[in-house]
Image 1 (cartoon, rainbow, N blue to C red):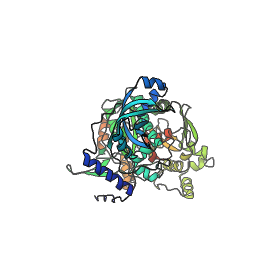
Image 2: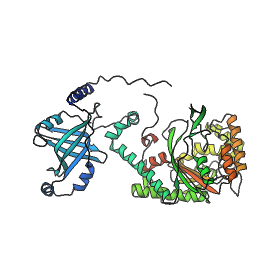
Image 3: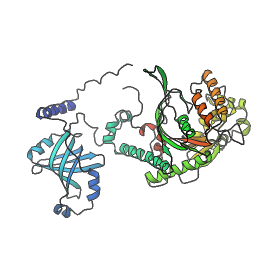
Image 4: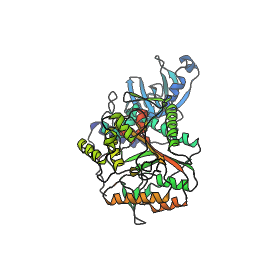
Length: 499
């Protein structure tokens, strides 16, 4: 593998000036000390004491020990103010010739925006009632060699925000908020399932046979075993093996990898929540997912509604349910049952619209292609599309009322697929036949068709109880909850082209 070239040497005069300061620090001793023990968080102190009387603080001094990055600095002769930022937020500090003394104050005047400092002091309130630390002792803990973006404009270049997320998080409060919300959303889902006696598990991320979804995998190689492996496209087949083994309620919050294009809705590496439960069907899943999203919204946002790109979504309202053809007809009444039920007419319509389709597809596959290209983007309110054709659902149980369709749904919100679930196929012979059909499609050139997984068939032959499972796209859901227009806004380190 070709190694990336080292970054070019910076000749920025600001960086050179800061390096000269670092050189002077090194000459005096340890330039990056690691013996300062922080005891307090800045914004938590502000919140705790913002309503405390100024005189009370003067008479009852509160000793604190804070640390953080200098974000603002105002030097005024014998006194200086600065704002430092830590994981909780910001707090102001006050440095004078008296406290901590002329020598430390003089050193402080040479500190730069972005430097990380440790502060011992006591709290007081300024004339404007701002909670502030009067500094008794001050230390430079880490020298910042690169200047932060200009404070009034911040980091506005989207490409640089994604590529240098560390800078984005320093200067953009909104970015920090998004990723705090992401963590809380995932925790809300985890709590929801754990409270209902689901067992959290971990399944392989490198697999000898990629399965559980129709997608093009990433390929890697294990040297010691001299074998080809695939990065996981989905954990589904391993989670259902656990249902066979007697773990009747399992879930995994996992990273999946699909060798596909990049867009505002797609990143080759993404996060899914998948959960499986025995002795239920897909109706149970649809009810459960609505409860899960509602509880997550209430837990994280404090309400059942979110506003996404100017439009409100209410997770408490009943979700609409439509079949693929029902959704097409609702939003495009010109597509009659006659057109949707005739393969030749469907092909003619797709050709007329310039939509690429698989020539070997039956009516169900062609209907799905038409839906995905004309209708799914219009499903803004939470909507379950149900009863998918068997030909495009190789792992789902056939419907008892019509063997050509399956007990499967996909949840769409804001024009995007958010979840996919179904009653699981537990007939080993039917599953083996569908795997063989997938292999036939792969041999015919479909790079996303599934492999034949003989061990999974063997597991089914031991007996998989009736069950159902679903996957929820965490990244797209976080986009909804945080009103983020691009998936890159909610992934800390999205995949980018080389610099």
